[in-house]
Image (cartoon, rainbow, N blue to C red; front, side):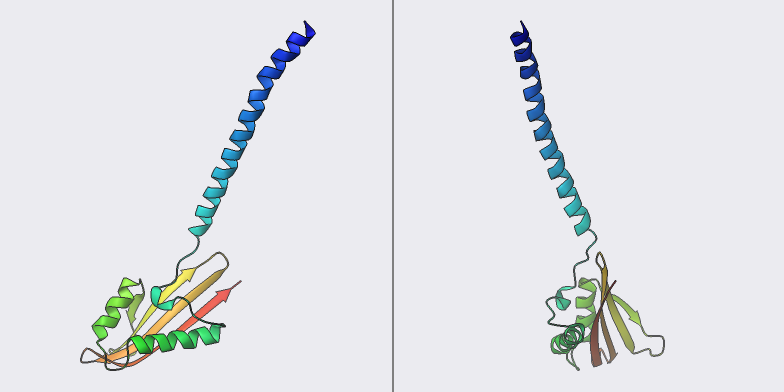
Length: 140
C-alpha cells in the first residue's frame, strides 16, 4: 500500500517538474527576447552617409567631412544635398546670421552615448558654394 502511494505521488510530481522546467525555459527565452528587443530600441542607427567611420573621434570627424565633400563638392546641386539629407532624417535649419547658410543635424542616442553628424553649407543660385561636416560622439 505504501509503495502504491509512492508510485501515485511520483506520477503526479514528475510531469509537474518537467512542465515547470519547460515553462521556466519558455519564460526565460521570452524575457531574453523582450530584453534584447527593448534594448535595441534604445539605439538609433547612424545615417547611411555617416556609417563605418574610422578610428578615433577626430579621425572619424575628418573622414565624415571628406565623405560629404566628395559626395557633394562645391558647385554641385544644393537640392540633391537637401534631398539626401532629408531621406536620411537629418534636420535641416537655416542659419540665423545668413540667408544663404544652412545646417543639417542628425542625432543618435544609445544606452550611454550620443552621436551627432552635422553638415554645414552655403549656397547661391541653387549650387553649393561652401560645405563642411563634423561628427562628434559623447559617452558618459
